[in-house]
Image (cartoon, rainbow, N blue to C red; front, side, top):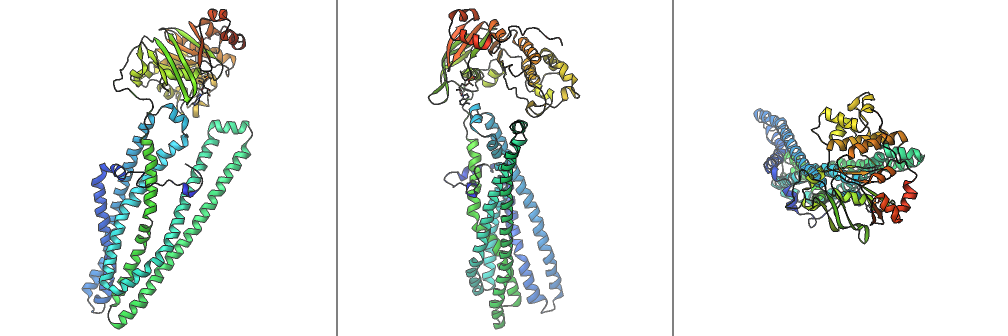
Length: 601
Ligand code: ADP
């Protein structure tokens, strides 16, 4: 959500959001909406009854001692509100059903479109904003159904039917009353608007507060706060929001009291005027006593609907604002999608090639420039270069997390954009530095790679990645929860789980970001051994940080500022005495060449 002012509450006009599109969302619910409308209209008409009942009692039943009529009217006095209550319950239920149905459809459509978005969408958006639109905005749609569309129609009916009866009862008094009505209604409208703005502001602050809390209580945020000893700063930020929230709530409450005061004053004032003028007409004999009572009651019925209708414009623009934000996400075109004639590949021999590939995240800033190389099936290729050279970008292009701006990538001679995305990604597994784990059990995290894997396969994968024994040592074994983002595990354990996940996937092409720097030497040996097991018989591209890897590699690709500057074997490149030789001396020479001493499981 945006900034802190109420004016930032989303609003939109009919020019920005097509009404037909909004109505389209309700296309599966026309039958229910029609019933709701009928119920609302019936309820509006039934509501007209009680004042007339009063009139009958006062004007006819009591003066003429008509017991039968009195009983009938008293019966209606109880029966009509009861009927109205039943109509209200049914209407409310259906309203809710339609609202929830539309919300369900929208959430589903939003999620499925967001899932199709490329990584660049997520790197450019705040996750809080995405979640807000999927939950908060969609939730607000419910209010639109119940609060705006149906109630506006029934309010119009209440106003016109009540006004019609007022004129039928006494047109002169009706004219006078309707003329003075705005004097009462406008202040109420003003107060209602202020309340609405304050509520919007309160919601924004509430959103900021929960976003702040999520950040400081997320494991990474909590750790960062402690490491930097900034608890007091976090507390100060929270206090500011907390204070704002308190002030707003107090203001809202105060305005609410004024609102109630106005409402409480309005009725007696309106009624007093009716009795003053009406009393005069009754005394003159041109109106009955029951007539005035009914008149006052009908007039009272007008205040609420008129005030709401005067606010309809605000409601509609707010509702359109919500739809605008939702439609924005529904209309997002995925940058990376399947070609209409995309081919599904099942097994590949995994010949991978980059052909004159260039790519930039931002215009004019090449992250990759004219990259050309090949990896033959089963080869191990090491990618080396300084930080920021473009290594991660290059590996991300293989799984089409991004598409190149120029040139293309091939698998077995086929442009990867011609391959069905799903089947392409099934061929590839990534093991990156930051192995992401879901807040779920170890088993569920592993099944993410292949949900039909059985326990035996899972354990086999874990043995191969040297994590099985560790898992068994946990009280809940494979059912242990790994904690948010896997924070309950050490870096090495997380990485070995990620490797087990890749083994389960059994990919033809393996992409590794070999960062073992943050692991202790024992973990490093385990991780290294697990990685070596994983690489067997697969085409492997590895961002290398270890001497053993570059020595073993069939080919080393040297990257510098987005360019592929050298390629060859370790011996060839050393002999060349160029950039690799320099890197070798600064980066690799210090690291161990071994790493192959397999620990026993
Ligand atoms: P390496 O993996 O070799 O350290 P990267 O591929 O991560 O390098 O980065 C290459 C260049 O692209 C760097 O200049 C980096 O700042 C930039 N870069 C990386 N990711 C993004 C992104 N999502 N948006 C914009 N620029 C990026």
